[in-house]
Length: 105
Image 1 (cartoon, one colour):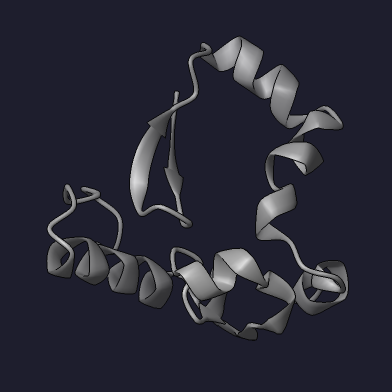
Image 2 (tube, rainbow, N blue to C red):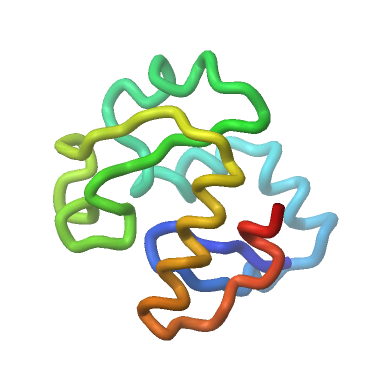
């Protein structure tokens, strides 16, 4: 199992198989995993998103500014295709490995 980390724009190995990952994903440990990517009030801000939407964050999650103070970022709903395409473009611009299918419409 791998995970595309929005705070590094890189694929990260999860070091577990599907069964262990599914058990983990359904546990309370998921909140701990995402703690660094959540801001006060995130639940209210994301409650009305559809499955085809995500949240854009400015400055971007991979920036020093966002990592130092995520609560101070600006956020807005956006189509996931737009978010994924943007991440793919940033990978290319920063000469990171292409994330593959991400962003493909």
